Image (cartoon, chains in turn blue, green):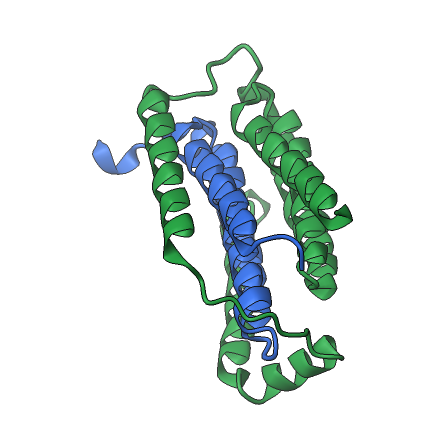
Length: 103
Length: 168
């Protein structure tokens, strides 16, 4: 293993922060979901890097990453169904215009 | 030396594609850059000697999640043309906050001093993972399957077209 653990962690941190910027700055609800996917990928890189460098004999980190995959799939399915339902009822996907609770 | 080069290439592709995902004006192009970012992350998994997860990454993220996102963009496309402003009013504070978080995380990573063990990966990781999932992690495994079922039913219920009563 010639690559230090820190490099993986820094790449994952950068990916997480890029995703965070996308979540906070996008107006399109689907753009926000894409940012969340980037953040989840960054978390997975972290989990697998820690598994490989700190505890490779047991597969705890990999199994945790598999659960993150499952939750991400569930999250994006429900999230996109919500976006489609809102689009159908309110005719918009811009997050600022979805303010039913404020009115 | 070769792993370092592959790592540098994969992380540059991933981070460049990720920046394009969050900044591109055309949301459909963003979705395609998202696929490229997922491929880069899969390459990083291979470098970390987790080839099974790399395959799952391609199957689940590219094969299911990215395609689902492209579908959703196609269904809602005419409302978000390229001329519209894609950023909200708080994008600059968000960028500063994200950059600050990155600096803090980088400082933590480099000052922590992780106790690295140079151990070997198990000979048959997939078989071991299957055993672990059905013994040690049986309860989380079952909860995950219930979660997926609930998400499936919920997505169908939320996304379903309302039935019109005129047919009666």
